[in-house]
Amino acid sequence: MFSALWFMLAPTPQMALSGVVGSVTMAFLYEWTHYLTHTGYKPQGEFYRRIWRYHRLHHFKNEHYWQGVTTHLGDRILGTMPDHTAVPNSPTCRTLGIEAPTDLPGPP
Image 1 (cartoon, helix red, strand yellow):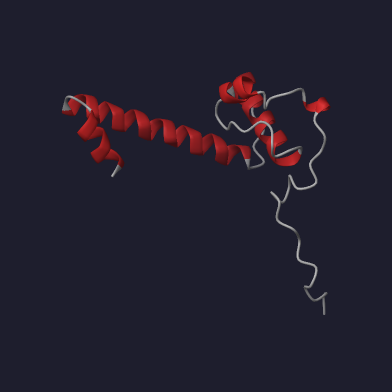
Image 2 (cartoon, rainbow, N blue to C red):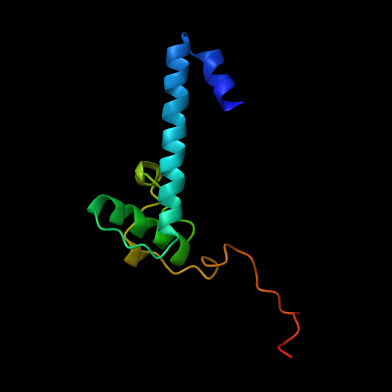
């Protein structure tokens, strides 16, 4: 479906194929970066270390900030990338708002 959209919008098949390849590459990079951020991998380069740090702040500090995964341009524009020391810890950042059930039976 995604490829069909490119072929409908692009003026030539070559441009459509370029759009498909570019989009798939960007999607792969996005997902790979997001996956690595959620593993124990420690980034070596400065660029990826910054992305890793902001995404970790999003999940472990406050889920209302640092929304970007591979780029934080939107966060800069929308003001959702403040200094982390000025942002309070969110009580739901690790659960994303899902309350832990209180009526579960205890251990046997």
